[in-house]
Image (cartoon, rainbow, N blue to C red):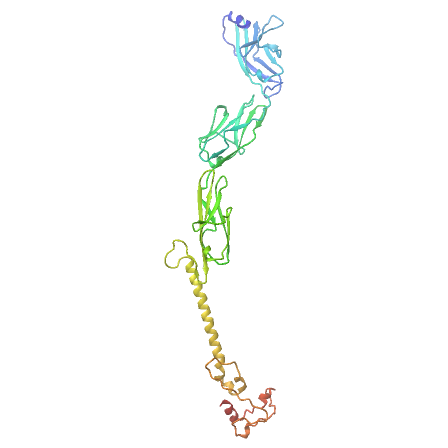
Length: 431
């Protein structure tokens, strides 16, 4: 039992005065390591008080009989404590272990004051660390992180990608937030986790810990997809994709058989050079971490001539889809070619036979020397009048052709030999 306790124990216990202890640091807002703090009772002890003393963690620092000059020290005295005016306590050169409860006791005739205060000394916080049993967690698994709490930490917070985490049905924390628990991990729980510690004079944050959530693939996708109707010589690139963590592995097959050599990656490039390349191409996606897999496919048909080499697997009877389109295209092409050939024949025939129906030929026998006629049409050789000669088989002397040039006639010598007024000559030419 301390001396001050013995003295107080010998006195009757009066009513407690309404005294408060004011903590005043020299470097606000809080006492810091190396600084000074003053603990002052408010209001001050009454004039009839005869004794005051201070205790730290229930151990006496000193006690002072007010009619004496020097106080007496106790077991908790360190040499950094000073008794100030009004029974105040001044502590210099604060250390972290000076944190704790302090109690003021004042006694006198009709006076008894017993008041306590908790003193917290803060230092600059060191950077905390985050620990975890594992940082790669499967979807719906359990994630637990542990944060370090340096001395003089007042608050510890958890962050994911810079956003503070709050307690809810998904996020759980232990008392003091020393650990973070996610019982059923979701895909969006992946990210960088940090813990932050604070006190009134400093803040420090840990290095990030990256958490990876593995999942998928739920489905695979092919681009282009569906049914592709192509021609020999075409080039096509197939791209396969799937949402998966970690990145999945890809393999390819053609009509149920693995491609040899096996293409690597999510892209397959083809040059269609034979009918054997038609069929169903499948992309197989596998996540070795989760064990899940998915498949996407595309069907390729090739056109040779007027029809497809291979129809879509499972298609039976009739033309469907792209086959109907191909049949219509072939019909249009054949009809166009037939019509063009018929038109050429008609024009050719008309040109060859036009000379026998055109009345102008009766005036110009030379024009009968037109285009040759088709096979089967007998062609009459025209007569070739010669200047100064008689036409064979003509007895009429008017058949003699002169070399005179008629007004308005053609300078062609052939036309110069003809006389329009000689009907026998034209009759001879027509026979």
